[in-house]
Length: 436
Image (cartoon, rainbow, N blue to C red; front, side, top):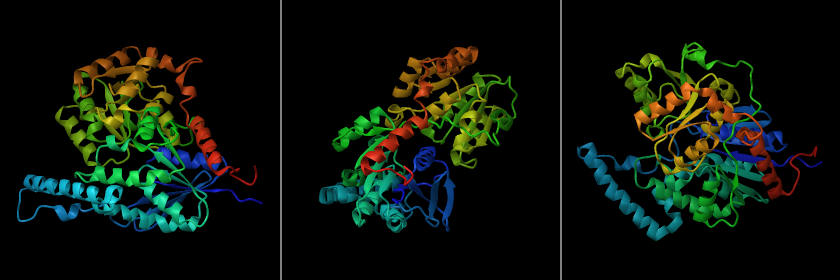
């Protein structure tokens, strides 16, 4: 009897807030693969649970993230003002980048971002012990970890790299000039080890093929929601916000950061009398959320802004459906222009009209489907116009989700999971389970 073939998925986060990773692991396990999903968190002990038939193991990093790099050694000394210290640090960092790229090429990341080795030390022994047949590396930091595990293995191992974003267009995760060139070098060194690449949009697939000289266009797996939602213990968004059915309610769901444009939304509320805003977020104590709430207080609209915690991703669509429209107020940033992001699909399946800034791909889609309105990014007055247009006639926009031409048919994770399963089968040329 042949055992199920083992898939090990890797991600550099704690799993719980990453719906794409959770969906990929659970659907692969549902298809018969023996799936272990490895994540990591700042904790002292390993945490384990199950997603359907998939095993989740969140490995403990202790109190510090692995990729701390050299920044701690470049802080102000001798009483220099902070701004002067930052300016002094940057010429040093530019010199470091130039020197190590000239002398080491793609291996330069070892000097520019040595903290990346922390992921190797954390994940490497666990991967080796699991003896996978296929490693699915989510996002860029896990690519090198997976590639080195493949090289160490005593048996053939296939490697799938799941590129969640276009790294050259990403906002650096830390304020230093080494971060981007270091991670670009890291990806460049290991991308050739991948047997297949998957990503989130057609545009990003084309960029990845161009940047890395890939022989084949990456497989596209849209960040679409699971159609089969869970209704047990379902929470109600309006109840959580303390508003009734007649109160206009806008919703934003997802991570908070300046470039995601929530300042513009809060600034618009004084011009939208009676309209409430729900912020569905992962951390109710996050500094930027507290800044937004303080901003709302200064504008006299604090009573109309409600921060509520995430719900499980299989409950999210019915949870969001209690709102009147979904907001995507992104600033212009390269990675914001090239894909339909997760919340776009979640709002769509909740049958919400969408108000989106004029970032390229989502703005074009909304105009083509008629499912919402587009406004100029950072433009408070134009956001007010778009919101008022939707609230005046929501049925007009919701109608885009009806009928045989509804885009919702293909915008499901079940449809995407079939592509992933087919890719695994092609790479391993075998059935995933002994029952098949």
